[in-house]
Length: 94
Image 1: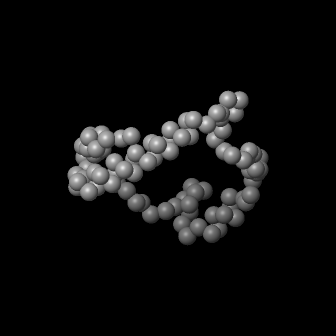
Image 2: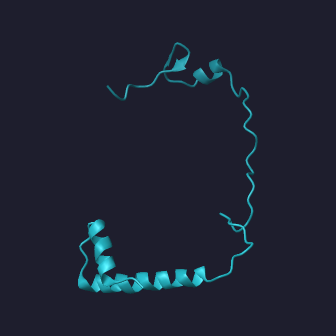
Image 3: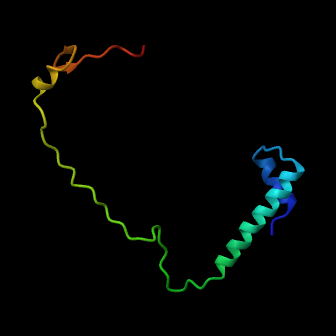
């Protein structure tokens, strides 16, 4: 069970200005959450391996293989401006 004073302390650390109604609301809500966590702690998990996913997942991405897609000259034909074998773009910073 969480107390109103604990909620006020956390609110002060988070620099939150809570009304009395909000303090009461958060005290009740957080108490319910902590009670539920206590219920979960009572479950016997002996022999159960910790997991991050309930369903086993496998990386389904393809191998990263490099290959030449296009010739440089063909690509530079599409450039509005080309300089020294590269695309020339407008300067955007100083």
